[in-house]
Image 1 (cartoon, rainbow, N blue to C red):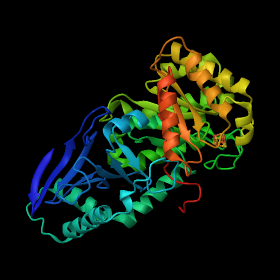
Image 2: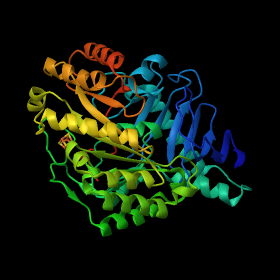
Image 3: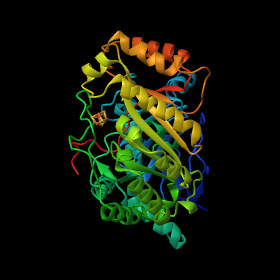
Image 4: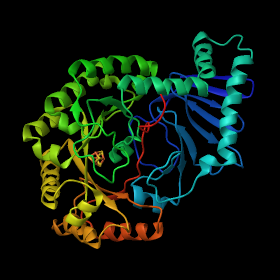
Length: 429
Ligand code: SF4
């Protein structure tokens, strides 16, 4: 770690943050990062000099414990404390992300469009101008190099970097698994398959491609290019998202090959953050088709693996209304498989998504209650159920009240699924 002062700026390079993701009620930072403190703002940069977080330090900033974060897709997200109790009950986290794009959020708070955030972003741009012009005589070469990288990584350069990342993986990531909340969505995306099995009528994130796995060469090519892309900042990652909408359907051989190669090439063993994690989506069919050998193989990988399955509903009329071509019988069988795997594989956690919305048939809630309460004789902490707000434009208070009723009834952990993405399918690259 190097500390120096330049004009009215306190600069700390390679500052050490926490080494494992945690759920806390204050602005925690992970891994290693550069920090520049001006009288008004705290700016935090990744090891490539790219802005990551900005937090206001003076009166006039929205809240002393809130900040904005830039994602690898170059979106700014505002981290709101909301009311701590409320946020932790609904999301399982102490911060509620306010997103800059349309999502399924039942909350309407939008500080990103406000003057405080605009001012903070202007301050970052002014900082870059200052770093380009201020005399850096006498500063050691590593400090000058880091400050040059910070000054050069302006909004145009960062937009181009985001486009590069998307080109490397060759697909949009219009939704990340809800389990990524455990690592604040800091996963390296690696596409092992495109498309999905069902093309459900209600779904607004699908790519309209029929499912097909990527070749070994394609996956290895992505891994090599991703390593170069992340560069000096690679050591701040210890998590992998195997995309896209149904990576589980790609089968054990491809999944394990991709996870093992990524582990080796990205050298996750030496990451600045412990507890490596693997994330992917699956479907009812890919879960039912997977033999137990696949889960045993995943259980042997050096990651803790989360597999998120979109089940949506166990009621026939609701599935019909949603245009999801599955039967309640299959949904229930997939739910049972989820429970069986969660009980027998200590390093795998399968979670499930269901929809929640006033426009769905009443029988949907009865069927859901049958699964998350009546099915169990006692509470279980493994295998969360995420309820995705559906049709949130109407009666959000009623939706949140229904959520709390279900949460009280459930014998599995239940949270709201707030859809977060990297890039939408129609984003220009
Ligand atoms: S809900 Fe899942 S399976 Fe259905 S269309 Fe969307 S991505 Fe595909």
